[in-house]
Length: 200
Image 1 (tube, rainbow, N blue to C red):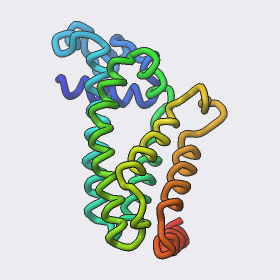
Image 2: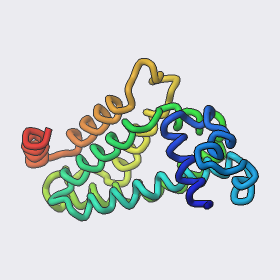
Image 3: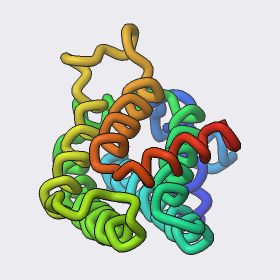
Image 4: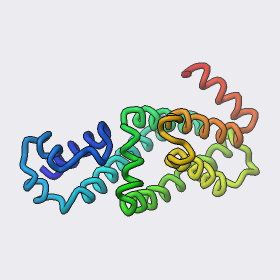
């Protein structure tokens, strides 16, 4: 039952955002009482925390599978970004905005936990790209991994990029292609062009 509550809540959060979804709505969607929810979760904040944790864990598993199947680093990065955009398009952008606004502690805990994983993976991929001759050897992988993640975090800066003016998809695409073009060798640039011509 705990898993069902969590799964249903996550789907509701994705569709409506966090603030709109009450415990009553979650209970009604499952055909259970609110008391049953309290038997498994202390409050809504705990549900939000577990749901967002689940979301990022699922994305990590999916991304790892993509990385293993890719022929080279650029293909891996492009596919991960495309997969992320595909998932993001299915989510009401209010979900992430409201986590930051109404549940800052949850936002900080999740960001801190998953930032290190993303940073380590990206740094390793940049190093691999160097070995493949796709990325410039002189770049500092540590710095560039942190620069990219910091830029991606800007997509959650709703003051700089209001939701009604900028789509998250456009922001991520611009950030990603500026980043990957900047660190790529001539060979890497050719691979990017060839890949995009073939796959769009």
